[in-house]
Image 1: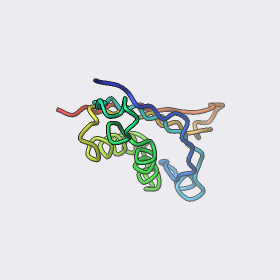
Image 2: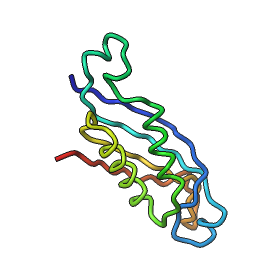
Image 3: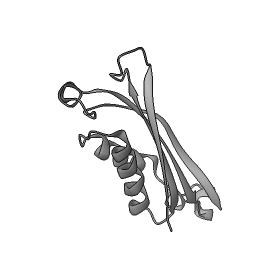
Length: 120
């Protein structure tokens, strides 16, 4: 059976941004991850092996967020690709990354990027 596993509001202090000050002092980021997956019957019998482990998904997101990058697009793509590589059950991954108070010269609570990858 197909289903979607969603982790919302993952918070990180990370060093992503085009400007040098963003990459030296960092900023607050929020990540939402939605993974379309094949949920096995064993999951409905309370067996974790039949679905995706939230802790494993979080670890994949955290590992990519720890790698400084200029663009959120690159980070979101790397997270989605990592999820698809790590799990044979994962069919597609959608990643939304939001940067709080981006340096755009005006008031902006957060700027976000969404990337979706699917297995062929």
